Image (cartoon, rainbow, N blue to C red; front, side, top):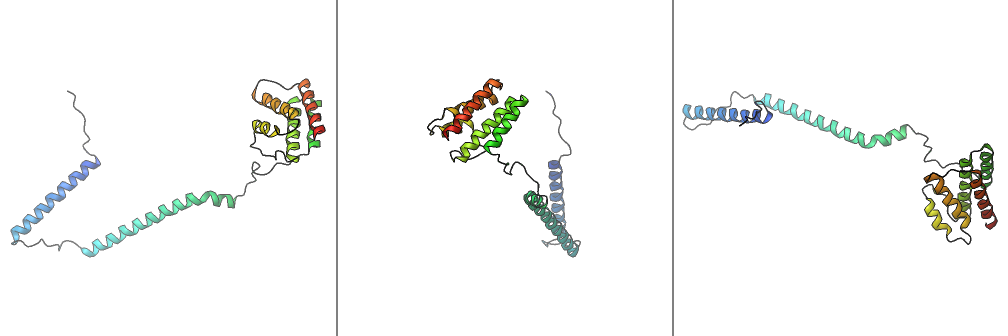
Length: 200
């Protein structure tokens, strides 16, 4: 059998040893008191009660100070983000509304990107123009969190939803598949935008 190694100086062992020594000391003191007098209690002349009271006050003050420091740290951790935001206002571009371009501006930008050969950005301008048109007509007000699927559900109520559907499906394909924007595709999207303008 293997012998296991035991800790010879753990905290539990120290506490048990101290309790045993205190018990032995108490037993010795009571035995001496009984031996010296018939059943009289031991004398506590050796204890300086004023010193003991002062030490108790010091320990209590230390405990109160430690508690107050701990409480102050908890309060600081709770309130520091708010204080930091108040003291250091940061211009958060995500929370500020973006400058809304008109449909005419978006179509103009689309033509500029087309002339530069950047068909992806040209299409993105057409797509944004369609969304702006839906917002301007109060069919689907601008919401950055709205998905193409949500727009597809909304436009089903329109008399001619096909041009919107084409642009939304093209946007999904360009964003989530390997399809690349081309001049032919851009021209089809421009035709869909013209149909939207005619129907509005």
